[in-house]
Image (cartoon, rainbow, N blue to C red; front, side, top):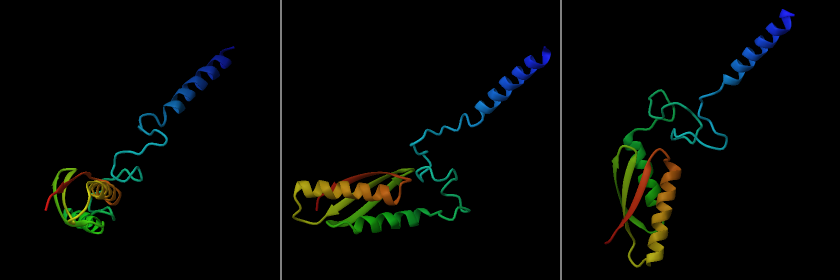
Length: 127
């Protein structure tokens, strides 16, 4: 009579251990981790051992090329503060307010796509 009780206790302990495995990973299906790579890796993207590591200069050059490829952008200036990048654009003359807003939104979207590690705030300058 003792054996069924021991088996039941062992099954409960084993079930408890198995259900605890995988807990605490903070993974929710359909959501990305906030690692700058949309959940594809858990490594630090700026470690020199990472083959995709880029320097601040390289990040800036990618952002500059991205911005200057957008039609209507004449000049781009960027200032960064940690993960926050403030972008100031000078646009071609003669654009309507709707066109200027479209260029601003396109710039923000393109920057976020090509360099998702940063939080971009794009502002327009006159002249």
